[in-house]
Amino acid sequence: MAGDSRNAMHQDMEIGVAPWDPRKVPKQARDFAPVATDRTRLLVDGKRPRQRYMEKSGKCNVHHGNVRETYRYLSDLFTTLVDLKWRFNLLVFTMVYTTTWLLFGFIWWLIAYIRGDLDHVGDQDWIPCVENLSGFVSAFLFSIETETTIGYGFRVITEKCPEGIVLLLVQAILGSIVNAFMVGCMFVKISQPKKRAETLMFSNHAVISLRDDKLCLMFRVGDLRNSHIVEASIRAKLIKSRQTREGEFIPLNQTDINVGFDTGDDRLFLVSPLIISHEINEKSPFWEMSRAQLDQEEFEVVVILEGMVEATGRRSTRSGPKDLQQTLSGSEQYA
Image 1: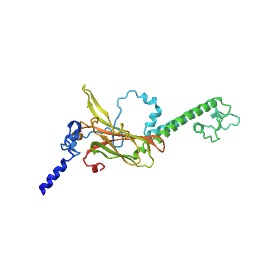
Image 2: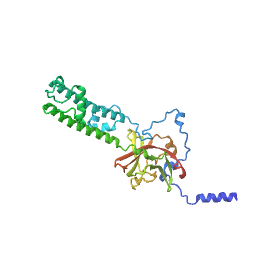
Image 3: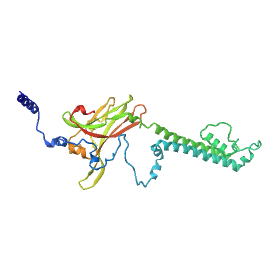
Image 4: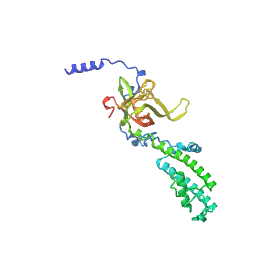
């Protein structure tokens, strides 16, 4: 009976099995060499771990060095301020207002000094340029009241001071420009949807497994919030150095990974977690990579999820690298 069972099992395994054509099968299926699973083997071999092109948080480890034309950053000052870190942005915000208040306060004090108003403080017969201005501190306070349009009513400009009227107009116009620029910069920085991207989650690992009898690279994405991401789209890039046929070495070459662009599957309705699949066919960059090469090659898969935030209407982007794990069991895909 044991022999009959083995014969029956052998016959069942042969039913429906067609001979493989090596030209139509990915190299992963052709190469069944055992793959080392020890993630510390790089340290054992005496090699240091490779630095990521992109961190798990989505931060790119790219630093611009030897930039000579730094004036280009100042040509787009608004974007430069928005891109600054919060502590530097708040410092610039404070310094701009403080500088303009001090500058115009000094000019108001200088006008009062030249006119001799400071020598006639308290004189009822003397008409000063600004009433109740007795020194630099009061001139500084008057500058703040003028630019912020507070107008306490204690220090006021008189009609007998034409240079003061001109200065008042200049400060009002420049103050409006400063307010529009700085408040606009702070508003854009506050409304940036970077924190919204934190609730867009990727699976910790990407896997290579069979799906509908096709070898696919798969990973999972999901949204934690109830507010939906409108017009969500996803794309993936393979970051890997390569050498051309002419011998040119291209570091960090970017190759597109098809995750449904031709079928429209890259446009997501991200209400529930979705499985993103890339079929490893002749056009895939993984077609000529064996199982052993996947574990030894130095490359990264960067996944970028874009969409419009429903609450604010602003575009949110979430990106991050994926670690590849191989499995032949569908139940292990989401472990």
